[in-house]
Image: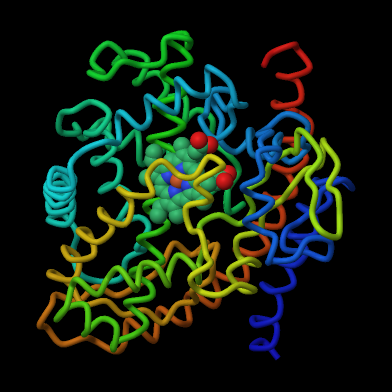
Length: 409
Ligand code: HEM
């Protein structure tokens, strides 16, 4: 009986949560792939020049702005097309550009530094990975090694965003504000030219949003997925220890099986003509990555978005740095996990780390399985409560709608 409830409840709660989110979309949203537009037209519509409205006019934007606060109005992901967007996107490219060799060396250095402090035993993979990305993106932005106080502020902030996005906890804006304050004080130390059309306050928000929210959260999630895949398949793990270069395939397959984006949305700014349908201007287009991955051929998948429509600026850097970190982890530890592994990975990837070459203990893995099941039940209830609260709170605050209603562009 208890077993049935344990298996049933989390699934029901996830379904209910999805329903609540769908309600926020309103009636005019078109989900792709879906009944109106199939997987075959996913890339065609995504790449259409008229699929270029970013935030304005979609109720869903209020929710994303809420989650990526403070400063969502200058987050690169949220900016409407125009000179300000161009300037911000250029700055991001400038900060991310490095030679392959320099990027690999930097990643290896920070990965070793952080992993030196990781002890074997039961861990949450996302928590172990986050300091690596905090240090790496700090160094890309400031061009100097990351001091411990900055690393702590970045990790606390990124963890708060990731936990809120998964509805495991409500937002903690004071925690986020501490990083904003730090960045404001350090702006003069950034050796890159920052977007001149932004005020100093906005420049701090831009750095926070792009590098210490998006970069740190996405990379920690991507690595947690990759390491969970490795931890749950001894065949893959042995192969990667002997042939580290094979990791690229595992990264590609992993990003497809566990896409980091659930939905990316756009607002059409003109009609989009398909063979069987004309999508009117002003339609909210919801591109569903998991559904597209499930309904299209492997080579069709676009883990970093489509090149014609604001694809990820880190699409070159991300796999390269994941490769280096995986090699460093596997050099030190063998991984195993009996926990559940789902796309939203709200359990943060529980796993057992054993020093490479040592014998793996069974008991912690049995305990891990039991603990994960129990946590799943209370966590899914917490997600329902916090998710509902945040959806309503985001609606009440209407950050995006209010911004555009005030005449801003
Ligand atoms: C494996 C890791 C990552 C994956 C799978 C990923 C995936 C994506 C995807 C699918 C998009 C497009 C979303 C859309 O069409 O609306 C995107 C956009 C974006 N990503 Fe990433 N991302 C990753 C890491 C990063 C990192 C490390 C950064 C660091 C700066 C980053 C910064 C951005 C930004 C700023 C955008 C918005 C681009 C724009 O609108 O111009 N991402 N990412």
